[in-house]
Image (tube, rainbow, N blue to C red; front, side, top):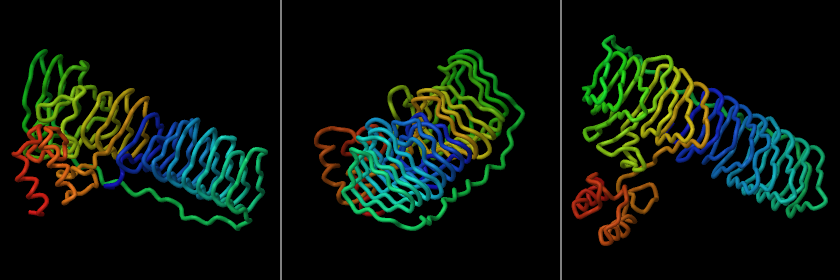
Length: 379
């Protein structure tokens, strides 16, 4: 599951972006793709304006993928169905379908090969080879620069979505916490009833496990503060339907235009008993094994989302999984000797980069040198 940014055990209604890992969907996918890569056990019905930086793989049909100016970098595959590529779309990889492939627009381009178990329709440009079992129809202004040949059936292995981890076997308590206006509290890890915010409250959590019956807030300026300086925080909410609209802060930094250190997203995990409506930005991994996740308009989840049911993007949403390596200043996903020169440059110029802030002080300075050397030496 480490390489998965979003897992939907049901259907996915996508109206936003998923970055930092693969999108896996056990049900149908609707909407517009903006993904690194996506694997679906059923079909894709696209609304156009798609973007994929990696592979697009579905067991069944892929309909209407693309859109004006759309770029799909990886291969596109339908195991048992057909693929329809619309509008002025560029596909840089191969297009492979168990059934038909149709490229329906003059200004569309496929730079890879086409392999189809049935008919092929080309209205634009194909810079690779075309292999088909059925009929090949080439439009008046179409161009195929590679070879054209008749092939046999396309036999591909079906994608099988992996199983989610088991849900936590936790039960909430019966003692509710009811906050008055302007009341701020710090809660120790433990088992509680419902946490009921009033107005203008701040509730502080520290390293450990918290179990709540529910978290209820009708005032969007209430704050949930996480102190992860001594380790991770796990929050379990047992209620059937959980709706969160809160300000989040991590180690004193509010999520109001300023992101805390990116690696802190992996130090926070939220699990809910059934359904979660997320209506405010959240840093942390979200686990909804037995229900659905709905992202409210303009909501960003910085972390991994593993969901047993449907996932709905209501609009302009994003999920960005964090792949953070402390000391990786060069950006090659590893801390090594290639990071020395850019680390020295940051020190010299007084610039900031999260991966170089070894002592997590909020600045890159000479106090980070000893820790940086320790990371490089593997101690």
